[in-house]
Length: 399
Image (cartoon, rainbow, N blue to C red; front, side):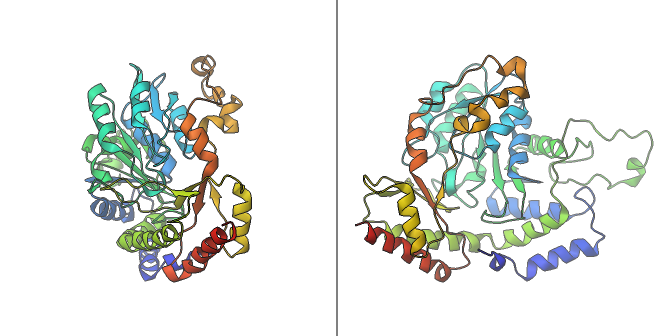
């Protein structure tokens, strides 16, 4: 499937601006600043900071809220491996909270049960375009003095009880990888309403340059200072997680069309959901009242008592569908974790930790193998209609 429909004149124009300017980095050019400002305004936050991936955004967020050696971070196991990786990168301890079997998002009651005096952050996932249950999560955070980092990689433009999710958690992280609502090829962007957190995340993502600010990633604005041999460039610890200027050029153009991209996915999702409305074995991700789902993908539980997951997928493909994507394996069941290979990241801390491979999060263990994800990353409803019709035929075939 080619995504050439996603790119238009603005992308080429902004990339040309970067090339014509001499192709600087984000420390000297202005395209990242422009992308950040446009995205923050579109998403409803005060500050935005670009990164080279939605993994590095989460890493910066954990560091900004002070997660370090031996601290516990509560997250859901039904997510991409990045959430585990960044916790381990901070020499912190992953604590897995179960999911709600209908929304597929983190179970707030299980989060509450797993908070300890060592809990330093709660990192829920707004899965597949649907917001996690933010109000009770934020209440837990306030009660215990624990910040909430909302991994909204797949939830651009999502509303929670009528509010933009970017306005609620201390930090909200987005991905701009190729499959997401807006794309820079690879990349990520993190938003917050807290200037100090924005400043810390920017420095963490760009080698800790002293000159960086919450709203500006450039470091050479004053050459008299920068070119002085006594100038100390770095006042914080950081990595080189910067987004290239050409990627930011794409991000700026894509942000200008964000509403259009969200609307296309939503329309296609509605077409799929109409097809399964009366199907008792395809159970769509539940949408709570007052929320929106911007449908990074259309996710459902497949619970047919007699037909296998793979047989349904094969028949859907036979009828012209693009295939069905499965959910990731649960984090603690992935080979890197179940084998113990992760312990090498910090043996003094991790060698004594034990995690059960079964029974740790019962809902997640039951739901994960049932999930079917139907592709809705098309340029129009008309392009998606043959895939929707393939689903209709598959349901009729197994009736």
